[in-house]
Length: 496
Ligand code: NAD
Image (cartoon, helix red, strand yellow):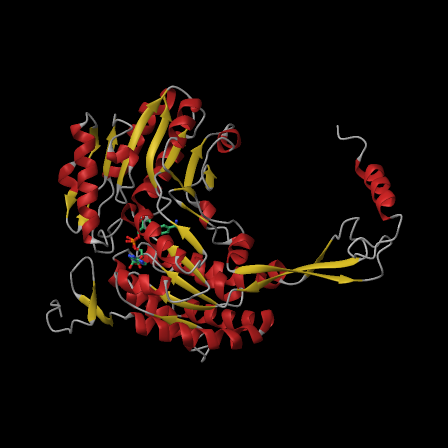
């Protein structure tokens, strides 16, 4: 079927971005549908919490095993609905599975009750902290990494003891359904549910009374999500776009840097939130780097066949943005070292390498989300750092340098940095992932990611009567003099 005419107005089709074929049809869920799903989730959350860390770990690992054992089937669906090559889908799935495994195995250690020091004035107290699940978490996902990205939220929210209502992107609902259906093979209660539709359905989730909303998508939508959630004071975690810089230092292995920049910029057709979009190469290695990058880019090809390096642009409207950025770069004096305006061949965009593009051009300042890379020659690492930081985004960055990597990383104002590798920070389950400024706030992955979906509960319990009773109106007569003496003795000296 290649036509969408037959479906009713309450339904929408997800299409294969390479061929336009209908992959599947889905309901456009209304606010009432969303409210029902959240009500079901609220009951299921009580059951899920009652399973405890051990029970949830067992069930989440069963789910992990199902995903892992049906890897090929899932990768084929991802290729069909999202367009990415199956090998890229397999890589994405492998990473998502490892994160799911880590979250389920680490939740107790990170969130479980633990004793903390009680200080001197409350030395008679047994003080403890534990992290409680919110209840129902709403998750809104994008299409570019339709498994890894939402599971970066969902795995951690579930492991923390929450029920989840998930709205995948309208471009990848069948992938979202596959995840929810396989979870239901393990857990019969509606602990993890799917709702489908466009922005209005997502908005209904924001205002549905969920206890926390996890959004991953563009900055513009992130602002709308936050505004909607503010009406009910629903807390949010916002994971948005990026314009990640790649610094090639004077002591970089130029061949390795070019190979990494190419994969980070062109892999997944450049549709990576933390993908390489702008390169700053120090003058002494600039020519060699550009030559190597261009040589590599000329060997890449967008397409649907097995030999293609990457697939189509998943969201058709993004093609206009990519085209506008290339046109603006060239109109403003930029040089297309590889490709150019002609590289935009919907639904594909062939590789584009641009140099000498002004920093205020949209190709450098805005998220392009396509297989284009700008390269700028800089005097030294200091200038590279300044330009890398001069962005409204602050998600990730990459540095290639033999000796100066850590020193440069310490001066970058973004959430994640990879030295002498690309995107590796997202692969490590223990590392929190997220950005600053327009890239959003809050963290997924790691211990911070588990805590993002729980609230801390602090409890004190009296072990023995306080030596000086201060928290009473019936204080002893010498309370004042004892307090003054104690404080001066404990904290009145030193301070250097
Ligand atoms: P998008 O903002 O268009 O859509 C994201 C999701 O929000 C979709 O499910 C969409 O239906 C929903 N939505 C749209 N309007 C809404 C509204 N008013 N209220 C609630 N939900 C609404 O983003 P996209 O095009 O799907 O994804 C690409 C963007 O995601 C890029 O900017 C990319 O950088 C970003 N991204 C960020 C991360 C990260 O972890 N930081 C990961 C992947 C993608």
